[in-house]
Image 1 (cartoon, helix red, strand yellow):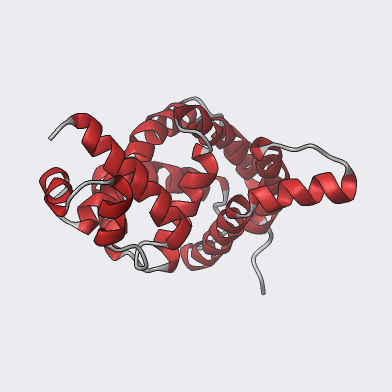
Image 2: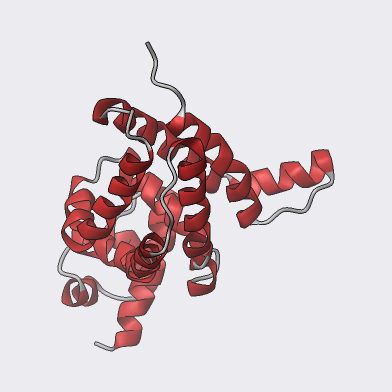
Amino acid sequence: MSQSTKNVILDVAEALFAEQGFNQTSMRTITRSADVNLASVNYHFGSKKNLIQAVFKRYFDELMPKIDEVLEHLPLHTGFAGIQALFNALIVPMVSLHSFRPGGTERFVQLLGRGYNETQGHLRRFIMHDYGDTVHRLLSEIHRRLPDIDDSELFWRLHFAMGSFVFSMASSQALKEIAQSDFNQTIEVVDVINHLVPFVAHGISGKPSV
C-alpha cells in the first residue's frame, strides 16, 4: 500500500465529497472512482469518518498555522474597523489555499459548507480536538473587538456570516460569470472575498438590536 495510493484516495474522496456531499458519497463510489478496493481504504483510513477528517486535515494543517501567525501580529481595534481589519488579515491565508491545491479556497469552503449542512458532528469534535487552540484564539479576537455584543447575539451573527461566506465561495464560479456577463468585469476568488468582507464585517459589528 503506497503513499501515492493514499493520496489518490484522498484526492478522489475530496472531489466527490465537495460535489455530492458526505452523506451521498458511498465508499463504493470512492473505491470505484479511485480504482482501488475497499481494503485499501480501510488500510489507510479505517472508516469513512476518518477519511472525511483526513480530507479536511490536509487543508487545516496548511491553514491554521498561517492564521496563528496573522493573529500574533494583528493590532487591536474595536468595532467595525477592528472586525474588518481582522477579516482582511485572514484573506491571505485563505487565498493561499489556491497555491496549496488547485482551486483550494473554493474547495475548502465547499467542504466546510457540506459538513455544516449535513450535521457531521464528528467534524466539529475533530476540529476542536486538533485545532481548537486556533479556533478559540480567533473567537477570542472577535470578542475583544466587540466587547458590547453578548455571546448569544454574537453566535447568531457568526452563524449568518459563515452562511454568507460559504454560499458566496461555493457559488464563486457563477459570480465570476455574472460579473463578466453583466458588468464586463474579470474577477478572481480574492475579489469575491474582498467584496464580501465589508458586508460581513458590518453584519457582525452592527449595534445590538433593542
